[in-house]
Length: 333
Image (cartoon, rainbow, N blue to C red; front, side):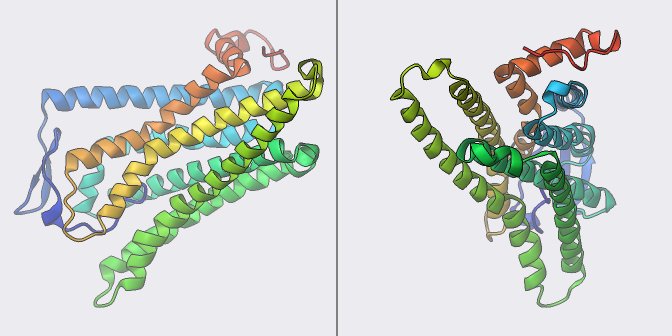
């Protein structure tokens, strides 16, 4: 998951899994169908469908309705695309080739899975990082927001996000391939694959985002106090705009918080695997892996819960009204 981690000492991995059995002698990975396994597959397949449908609603909403054509929503669109691919690609691949199986085998399917994992994970975290930058200018520098964050700037940010994600995945796979081939001192390859990869694709962007949101929080609190000391501010357009920006910031901070809640445990687990004599039960690792992937299901529900215009857009799409005529200019309440 998220790069698949480094080579793991096979003797340190628990072989208990509801759907598979690992032959410790021959290191074969064979299927053992059971009722629990069938129910698990049904549950995971349902999650995959929900992820695809939920993020398709977000993508169609932002693309179709002109009211949603804003820099912030284009960044949300990019995040929804990465979440959509998780449902379309990662869930089926992870069901067929569980994360722990790639500790034993490094075949082409595992490499494909690892490349998708790392690309989409990095894309998600970098999209969230770009969203935090957008929120910083909207809240902390509102007077220059429209000049510094516009459609062209957002297009560059999105292009840089996906390009960086692809390069990180390619670099990881090259380093892993060199580890398998090298003889003797593989320190630099291991450093790149197992340490620098997670640092640059996860930990460093997370630190940047946390610092940005802390700054935003301090500025927002200062603005709230200044509004309270000014009479009749609620009737002024500027106060309403600040309130809307504050709500958007809180919502996107929740998106980031849930991302960390889902993904941080699996990255910490991958870090523990680098420590010798640390046992990683397969059941625990697989659970954390699926918890991480489930994050792609949460974001559409967050938008629908907090944003009335996304709820309106979702209703118009689900009811089929967008197919009955051009309503792209409709006012979303």
